[in-house]
Amino acid sequence: RMIRGVERHEIELSVDAAVGEMLAETQWHNTQDVEHNDDGTLTFRYTVEGLDEIVYWILGLGPAVRVVKPEVLANRVRDLARQIAARYP
Image 1 (cartoon, rainbow, N blue to C red):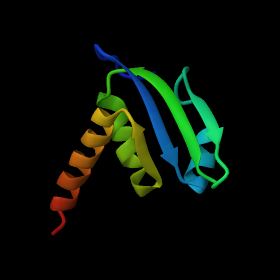
Image 2 (spheres, rainbow, N blue to C red):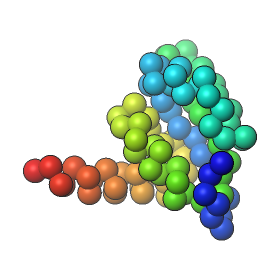
Image 3 (cartoon, rainbow, N blue to C red):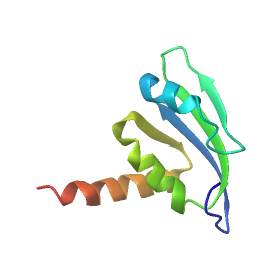
């Protein structure tokens, strides 16, 4: 169950094979849809209300995940990752 926000977002994530297979074993959200791709990656799709919780879940997966959409989420992940990296000069 995610922390609810005001705005509904369609989320699409591309996840590396090893991490993706592990994630696919769990139903993380009731809207979860998982697609296995020919290149070994997995595509995860969710419909969520608010981005506050999912942004930190994505960051916890590190470089194994890439936000495909929405752009606002990709930008938040990128900006937070830069802030984290800046703490380790």
